[in-house]
Each structure stands twice: as structure tokens, then as C-alpha cells.
Image (cartoon, rainbow, N blue to C red; front, side, top):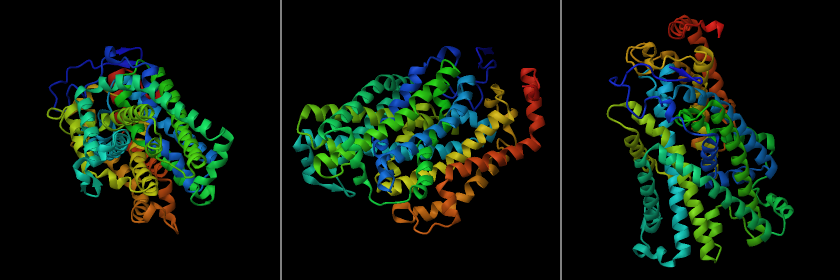
Length: 510
């Protein structure tokens, strides 16, 4: 069924083992997310402590403040392109990310990239939960001195007992939201966005006032440079890290845009919500950190540590609420929705969206996020760049398949059939898997070197280290080209025949 360029399922496939209520295509009536809802989603996900500290990480490596901001803006404009392209299928067909993967990787093979995406999301869930937990811990200590004395100062696994209590408290609150489903996330993001924007603005106004003026703040950013590096030597890795920051969402964005009212809503909402918010909040982080040098005589990059310097409990309480909402809104949307669907895709009849979310919450702890955030260098050069290579390869295959091979034409019902068009050979499209493996291979040596080097930066980079600094771009391009060649030679006719049978049109006439 076609209505306003929306495709609805016109065949009952609910008995298929590949179908459940959460993975089923959204109906037109369910597609209610407006431009504001999509923009608010990105505002809610972008305003978070890791974004606040991102620009400072680049400056610490040797960039100036404006170079760091341009790099972040450029990176987010670049990642917006695959974001909008992958979002199209979600809005048109009402399908989630793992279901879209079935068209290119096969009904069973889709689980391979889905699990790669899910594991990265679990890592991010753990990171954001740890940051949120430690933030609440620090702020509770500032409000009530007795909080730090809980357990008599006992230390568990290198961290105070009260920190672990805060961590698991924050974790438990998120589990409650997971149990409420996807609609809870829509409402959370919509009311959180204005509060987060207000909180960031208040912090910037305070910094500007306390430090004298804006000129002093910008002039003082040079004090944040821990080294004086050459911009063009730092830029490739910083740009890749900026792209990699949201490389995950550029894949699973259909999980949200399947609820969008129109293609215009998803495109405009993302364009307004992502690049500007990311750059603006990263700038706030840099400006306020620079202001702390003037105000306190030292750079305080962590907003939680900064807030602890205040002696007004009302201010601390307001800040605690903003930070709490920032971490919750980001984690729920960016790091729960996708893995929940991805885990559900493993066995749709037994694993629901909620069950998948609970699996995510448990694995997020098991990945020991306190280790992933051990240093800013390791965070940028190992974590962000490392997984961007995986996400780039999957993104290249998805975009090539949907836009070039299938020309935006998908047989919706066959996505849920074991013996349909997308079953390929035993449920696997070996061409997509081959493209994925070959695309990732060139950046693996560089990743291993970065992962075993303190701070993630190799002193004397070789050709593989250079490839690794461009990981997302390298894997995206290679996967795109290899997949196109393999599918174009063997499956082009099959795709044309399928499109002709379903839609009554010739692919080359589209």
C-alpha cells in the first residue's frame, strides 16, 4: 500500500519467525514525529558531558579553539549525509535498522552488522551511565557532605562505595524508562531539549560574566593546549573522531525516522538539530573551561568538578537536574533503542524490544566503562576512531544497496520471509559480508597499534596508522565500492525483476 510516498505492509507475515510487534513496520497512523520531535531528539542527544569535553580534547592536542569548532562542525555535517540517506528507508517503509539490514546482508546475515552496532551501543550505554552516575555522586556530595561517608569510606574495585551506589541508581532509573518503551523516549526528548538549551546558555552567561568578557575567554583558550601540534597533523584523526561520534546513529537512524510524519520532517529536523547543537555545546564546553583558568587559576574541563566549586545549593541542585536529564536523554535515545532492536532481531519471537533493552543495560556494565574513559586520548584515538571503522563499512553497504542497487525499492513483506527475495543463500548474502570484512581489514593494524599505545597516539605512524586515522572514510569507501561491484555483476537482474514484479516499473526507468 502506498500513501504519500509511505509504503505499508499489505501482507500478513505475523506468523514468520522474523516478525514481532516491535520489528513490524510502523503504520501511517504511528508516524507522528514532527520536525520538532526529530530536532529535539538531536538536541537531547548532543547536549551531554562527552560533547562538552570533546572540543577541549582537540585543543589539548594542539588545536586552537576555532580550529576545534570547525572540525566538529565539519565532522557533523559530513555524518549528516549518511544519516539522512539511511533515514529515508525508515520513513518510507516504517522499518527499523536491523530489518533494513536484511535487504543487503540477508534475513539471517543481518545479525552480523546488527550485533557489531549493538556492542558499540552497549559500550556507549556503559560510558554515559558511568559519567551520569559519577556526576550524580559528586553533586550529591556537594549538597550533603554525609554522602561521601556512606559505607565508612569503603572502596570497591578502585572506586568509593558511594560512587558505585550512584552508578547503579542511575542505571536503575534508566531500566525503568526502558520498560516504558519507545514512546517514553519521544516525550523525554521533547521536554528535555528546552531545559538542556537553557542550562547550556546559563552556564555560558555565567562564564562570560565571571571572566570579564568574551574576548578574555577566547584569548585564554591557548592555556588549554597541552602541546603545540601542527593542525594538519592533528586534523585527520580529530575529523574522523567527530564523524565517529555519531557514526553509530548514522546507521540506526531508521529506528527513529520510521515514526517521522514525512521525509521533510526527518531531513529538516536532523539538519537543524545535529550540526549546530553539537558545535554550539562543544563551544560552550571550551569557553567555560577557558573561563575557569581566569576565574580559578586552573582549567576545569569536567562540568561536574566545576559545579562543585559553587557554594549555592540551589545552583548545584539545578545543575544536577540538567546533568541528570542530559545523560538520561542521550543514553535512552542513542544507546538503548538500537541495541534493543538489534538483540530482538536475533530471535524476534522470544526477544522483545524491552528484553533487548535489558540485555543492553547488563552488557553495558560488563564492558567496564570506567576503563573505556580512562583517558581523553584513549577515548578519542582508540574508542571513537576504532568503532568508526566498523560503522563506516556497514554504512557504505547500506547506502549502496538502498540508493544504487535497489533504487529505493524494497519488497516490504519479503523482509520478514525466510524464503523471500532477501533470503539469498541460507539467509546470508556473502557479498555483503565479504565487502564488510575486506573494508575493515586495512584499518585493523592501525587500531591494534593505537589500542596498545598509551593515549592512543602512535609516535612514528606508518601507512596503516595513517589509514586508521581516516578509518570511517576508508571503510565506508571500500565497502561501498566492493559491494556495488559484487552486487552489480551477479544480482542486478534479480533486483530489476523483483522491482518490476512488485511495482510494475523497470529499475532503469526510475
